[in-house]
Length: 238
Image (cartoon, rainbow, N blue to C red; front, side, top):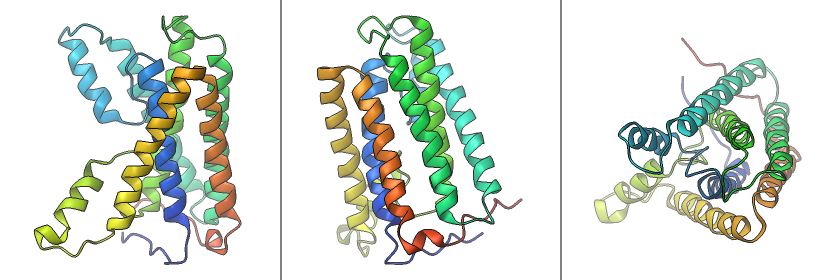
């Protein structure tokens, strides 16, 4: 199935760049406050799980398993929602996803009020926070994957950086989408910087609340644009 064509006037790439910054915020919360766990980057969790199984100190199997399972649950939900809204408009689909994602982050912010990042306690709150945020990011990843906007996964930069170098004029390429790629990298970086500052100065509540707000506001802003009235993603083929 061919990816949908993105109108040059469609602000969707800009929205996805904003969501890339949100990923930096979320990973700052999870890595700095939830015991070196990624809730957006499952490659990192898989590697860390390997460290834990191999007996490396500071890495614990349950945290990474919880993040991986919760992320898969969110991705499963994201695929179901995308298929359910396939005949609807992109506006309705993305607003529904954003509302759920925002609710998960705001519930996590409430949970974080009674959570101590320094001691990772109580353990029940730790795993609740991992679960809520990983489900949210799984939902996001499944949704963005269905949108099929090149170079803007909002969570993974490895292929973005590879494309930036491999398609550059230095390699004989045409510098395709270089502005979009650079913007995605810088957005994630700045989100991580802001997230780290917020976690260090105010704990987890503020960055989680801000994350939910940014997701909702960015999607609401996009819903006001005529491009959001386009048909939502097609269902996955066999």
